[in-house]
Length: 421
Image (tube, rainbow, N blue to C red; front, side, top):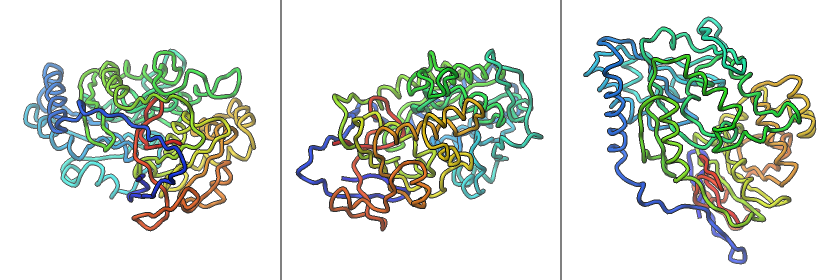
C-alpha cells in the first residue's frame, strides 16, 4: 500500500492479522477530459464577461496560493489568451495568501507558470500591509471589510480557485478567495473568531465541513461578495489525483454552490462504524507543507476513529508549523483553557490549536513528520520519525513511513488520503 509524504511516496506491506478497510469511492463517470472541462468553464466565463466589460479593461485575476493548487499552470495560459484576444484586457494577477506568510518568488513563479510570471504583473497579497488595503464597509455582523486596494482599482475582478470541504468554513473556494484571500489581518481575525462559541468557548457546533447554511464563519465571509459586484469566478472540482473533473463560471456564490454538489459526490464516503486505528496522509505537498495545513487531514481522520483509538498521520511539514501564533496556545494546557483564552483574546489560528488539542484529549495521534519532537509533543501528539511501528515498512524517498491509498475524506471529504482498520 502507498501514501504520499511531501514530494515523495511511501509504501509498506499490510500485516495480515489486521482487518484493513481502505476508504475510497469509484467514480468512473467523473473522469473525462481535463482540458474539455476547463474549456467549457472558460467559454462560459468569457460569454458572461462580454456584456459587462469594455475593451482595454483593467482585469484583476485573484488566484489561490501554493497551499491550494487548482491547476493554474493550465488555466491561466488559456484564460489570459482569451481575455486578450476578445477584450484586449490589461491583466494583473493577485495571489490570495490570506493570513499565510509570503512565499519566495520561485514559489510564485512555479505556481502560475514561468510564461505567465514573465508576461503579467504578479503580486502576493500581504494582509499586514496597511498601505495596500482599502475599506469597503462592514458585514451585517459587524466585520470590517478591508481588502487589497487592487480590488478597488480594477475595472473587473475574476476569482479562480478550487472548491473542497473546509473543516470550519464549510467549503473552500468561492467567497474565500476574497475573505480571507485578499483581506486585512483584522478582517480575517474577526471573521475567524466566529469559530468559537461565545457561550462555551469551544468550537461552534455549526462550524463544520459541508455546512454553509447555518455556519457563522461562512455566512459572514460570504457577505464580502456584495462589496465586489464587478466580479465573476471560475471554480473547479478536482479528483483524487489533482486533475480537474468539473469547471463552472459565474457569480461567486452561485458558482461555488454548483461546484459544492460535485465535491460532495466526489469526496463524501460512508463509514459503517469507527475504527480502532486510522492511518492518514495529508496527501503530500502542498497539502502537508506545514502543521496548520496538515491539521485538516487530522480533522477528517478523526471522524473515522473510535474514542480512545489511534490516528497515525503522515505529513512532512517542510515549512514548519505555519504560523508563529499557533504553538503558544498549547501552553494553556487543555482545550478548555485554550477556549477560555480565545474568548478573551482571539488570534488567527487559535481555533486550529483548540481543534487539535480537543482531538488529542480524545484519541492518541502519532504524527510522522520532519518537525522537531519537542514541537509535536507540545501539541499533545506523539512524534515519530518513521512508521516501523505499523509493520514492515519501506519508503521510496528515504524515510521509513507507511502509506495506504487514498480517499479524500471520511463521511465528508478533504484534501488528504486515508485508510482505516
